[in-house]
Length: 189
Image (cartoon, rainbow, N blue to C red):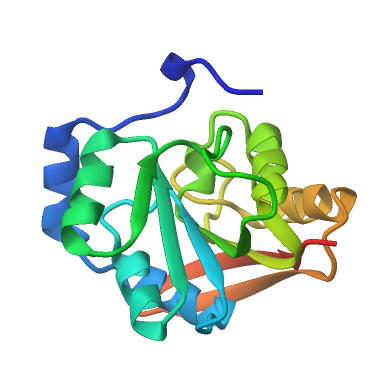
């Protein structure tokens, strides 16, 4: 069920430009792509691709690479950064691709922005082929609010994936530089 346009967070061109000054190539994106173990046979989607750091890295691996972002300004910047990829405006709750299209899906520091996590997880499952891999990587929080996810929130997400038939579903702590992340991953059953 598509969400109303106003319900999905979109960044302005100015906010995207400011974000780009400090976050052109976050190491968390590279670490997440490595955790997915992408190969040339993969059809990969980055959910909330931002400036395209994960897309750029995945292209170098040889995967078929696609991204979505709710911000048209982010889509423009990602397309400028990485040639030969498909990047569209869209949100996790309304992914503009056909069923079973992707073998790997990634959301780095975007899950906490999803307007409707249940709808987003259903959409990801729709576009992820059986046996496809999902990785959601969020900054580890000590409390339940902020830009990231706490341990209890990661466990709730794990339970949601199990209920949707993903298996195995794991929560791992990932350290990237001085930052701690929680990685929730599973295979679409």
